[in-house]
Image (cartoon, rainbow, N blue to C red; front, side, top):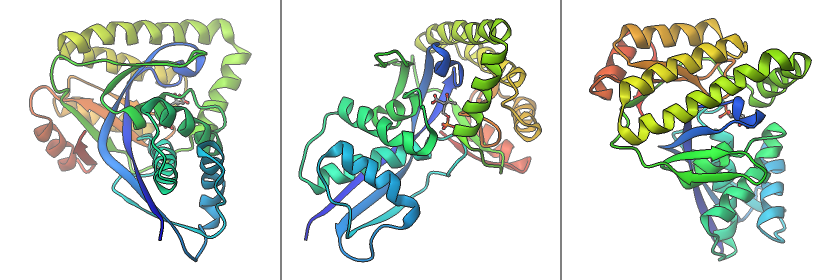
Length: 287
Ligand code: PMV
């Protein structure tokens, strides 16, 4: 019996979410937490909520009849918190269907196809999530067109911690709302997006040089600008403040905001920072 499995890893956006939708660069990184799908011909057929994504993946990977395909999903990636779960699932489905067909895809094809599947989840993705969840590592990304993703090797391991706020978000809603506000007040929002682009450029140098205090400063600044774009929440702001009180060099929401996850840059051991955040009542893990 034919079986295909595929994995997609989660991601964090280190700098530049939202502004990336408006033409600025972003820096993202893969995380080890992942989603894994196994696809086989069997009954029962896929659950109704998975059907649109599976159909989109089957359409981009090739001519695959999804009727009678059973899909099982497992993994440890939290859902709808800004860690790229929809992109990771899209990557896993593309890889799983390709494996099911005994077809080899190169990484660029996986990212392009997964971004098509992502449209099922949230309309007009910039492509940063599909790139980061399929390519992994630290990545410089520009939405284009054409999209451009290139590896951004850090000077050393980035001591990053993920903390969950305990709330969820909806990326399409958050991106759509901000787009609406930005279109109504372009003279106000364009300089903010531009400033985010500038701090992403400065962040690139900080990552290449291993200048973690500077990277932390830029992350906190990025959070402030996302706050003034109204995509943060009081709970996310509390996690950011708790991270700083716990000794982080900087912290920010990651992903679309409106709930979800925060990333914090440790001044030293990320395990110690994660433990301090857990001590303050947040679920936290080293990225
Ligand atoms: O889906 P999330 O929460 O990982 O956020 C995606 C990043 C955004 O910049 C907010 C949207 C996009 O398509 O780039």
